Length: 156
Image (cartoon, rainbow, N blue to C red; front, side, top):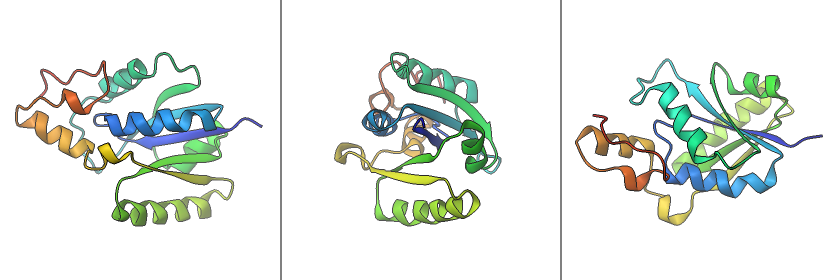
């Protein structure tokens, strides 16, 4: 059986922290879906198609990475993709508490799912998409916080 994982998120935008987790997780899975989710409770800063395009560019040389968009429950997406793993990154202990709760609910909804937690590399612990958006929103150069090929210039 293929080992298929889903890494869900808004990736608004993808950061070097996301990239690090994905690259470290790749050897564990036959296929890794980076699933850019539509969250009706969040107002996106960068357009969905642009976020998807950036992620595809960053991982263009990784044959086992697929980038998709989705809406709804992540476990339902996992069922459709025959994925048995959800990949999540943890920066802080509060991330763990939040993600643990979601992981336990996901397990109740889909007993075949396992949530895999990766600790963020120390150099990216303070980095998140909200901070990157705030830098961009206020006219700063946030390109140092995103993977090569992602150009945030021109957004405000």
